[in-house]
Amino acid sequence: MTTEERYSIVLKELAARLPDAESELRFRNPFELIVAVVLSAQCTDKRVNKNTPALFAAYPDAEAMSRATDAEIFQYIKEISYPNSKAAHLKGLAQTLVEKFGGVVPQTMEELTQLPGVGRKTANVVMAVAFGKPAMPVDTHVFRVSHRLGLVTEKEDTPAKVEAVLTKNIPAEILSKAHHWFLLFGRYTCTARNPKCEECGLKQVCNFTRIRS
Image (cartoon, rainbow, N blue to C red):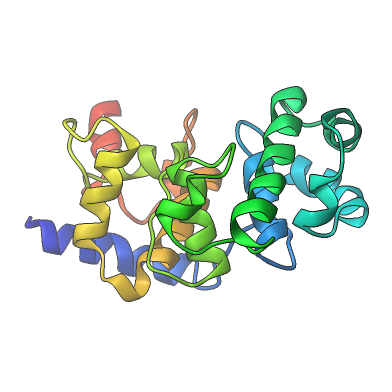
């Protein structure tokens, strides 16, 4: 099987399985999205969504959040993992947005990664989801699914390497959509523990199935 054939099989199956795939984080604008993505690190989207309505009501934009203290922000996110460090990140993020970008969330990798708490994955999510740019955020789900389905090899052992290979082999016009396909497939079907192989339509390309059998 060629690389092109493998990618074609995977993309067609996931497109049919998850035609309406999109972010499960709730947000109304790029500022709310970047805040939610920062909060979602090592935390479920469900828990983030439970806490962000009150946070966004108190701090609807970067200007408002920049005036808050870490302790004040902490009170709204204390049920989320690592609330102390994330409160500090959000405070710094908001201040940097105000001071460097006029309170507006930027749209490039170079600018986004200048914001506290924003690494490459978070920046890619913002570019893809908020601005519709071709981007491939690689989280634990995307990383796992890509390896199990043979879309990348063992030598692609970092998120950055996986991102480069996926970006090379997936058409730009569906790249961001493919991120959601991989993420949701990994979150609900191709799970880290006890994957639902009986529900998967990709056994013919799955390395994990062959290892288990």
